[in-house]
Length: 195
Image (cartoon, rainbow, N blue to C red; front, side, top):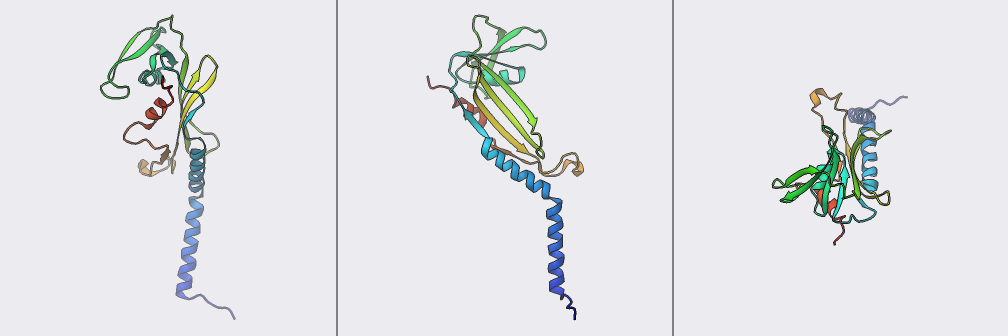
């Protein structure tokens, strides 16, 4: 004799099946978020391998040079102008770096001042990961050729923005989170020597 399911049991089976389908549909999102959390815990935030010494010229591309020039302890930040090809130095001359009152001056590079540090700012999608991106600010000591400071921020998009209707889906999450202030600025400033 076969036993038939009662109304409560049918509802439970139906609910279990629907839950299973949702879990299957969102499995990649769940896995991607798990990987994002693991990578953030392992690699996110500030990494200081050697303190940044104060009073030196720093070098970088046009994207990173303005950020580098804004730090207390940076004599000036040097870059090669894409327009003219000339090397120029940028220097904070008034106010506090990163604040609206900050004023900078750009002038021809002082060839007698050799850059000590090089800044690189990169943003890329991490290979073999699902919608996971890495933004890195890396400062290399040009004397030793070694990485002195790295600041790493990861972001994860819950859904593919290209497949969500009108881009209305949740955007995602980042770590470390940036608060009202600029945490990366404070973190990097803390890596400068106290002298």
